[in-house]
Image (cartoon, rainbow over all chains, first blue to last red; front, side):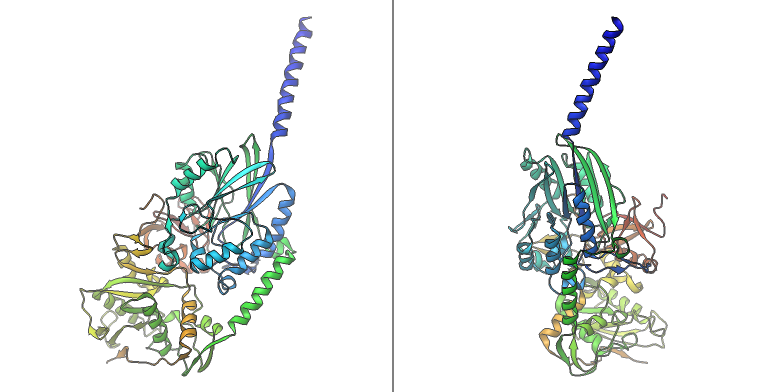
Length: 516
Length: 76
């Protein structure tokens, strides 16, 4: 009797346990978040540094995303910097990226800082073309962007909030962000979470603020379930959890596809499994055909555009002797730096100019051959002494034809190779006046030299001395950095200058004179 | 530091534990140039953040970021 009573209780307990387990199983939802970030228009598969195997390729990524979407209810998200970077996208101001994303059926995208690089009007156009919501909760002044979107996936309501780095105005041309305000990220996300209360089960922040900032955000704001990140191009092999927030990021250039599988019970994530799926032609074999057609069509147009004649050189443009003397091509390019940035003078490295252009028609491809690197214009305040130090350093490797030899605008100088390196510069004139060692001059250069490239230390020292950084009315105000247009490659600025000028006939003017 | 997340102007970071100062908007590529280690990256050496994640050369950096080239992290 006693034994049968125990058996009955055990049987009842087992039934209850089984029943509730069954209920939990019934309530559990399996959903999948597929994600990419920092694609930057790298549509074609390509070989990365140090590797012989082609990787990436958006048509292969699309094929993989399609397969993975069939396995369970999914969303496909993009965490910013999709439309700018590679020539394939740049030549058409990002339109090809949006076309591909439409074909792939993206569910949402947040803007990255580089989405602003073609200007506000172009961004608005791209947003209008997108068949998915483009988010930017912490941007004030651009009505086309939505703060968040709600997407129901497998019975789970995802509240997806988009944010971008507050630093955006400091890394693009001031005109591109004029009239816009970039609000503090944490406060913005808190506000959005409040607005989504009762309307979303899971909060996903689609973030373009970088991995470290994502962690800080997860630490400081309660209620974020998932951060799908971008900006720092971080390859997170597996997700991390900060507080109760899952953080993922999928490297760059469509080289991997992020996969985050979630089990959701009663509006709560009870299990998460993540991975990055490698994207390569060898692995995926068959690209998605409709996406491949878009890629091929724009590639064809790129080739066509590259061959288009945009101006005429009345003389040969000398890119051969840029490491040993002033050349007309060096002058032409240095003048563009000065004009674009409004600087007093330009100092660039001759080694950054890689080819000549023969007299006659100039096509875009020839300019890209002259300036193959992804460099942009920076202007920094230097003292007269620092200007002279930079020139001394530039002249110190002339015997070995080092790339540091300067090409200049707005200034002229004489030098003697009979003197030892470091004491070669004689007279320096800025805009016709003898240089004042104490006075500050705004000097344009490229980001390579500004970072200390070719061994130039002067610009880095000046950056280190910078103070009082602020963004006032969309314009960067800082101690020593006056201009910083990270969103436009120098070669594209030169293309525009040639298109505007049509006939190019620069000469050697005696800006750099040897006086032995 | 502005707003808790923004980078200050004289963005200070560390490459293989050596301090580098960069302008805002500059990336992993610029940090390696400043540290004289860009050739290593061109030769195929991978770059890692302080958490051991690989980062791309165009990846954004932030104040006090630590990146490593030629080693996964200083901590190993």
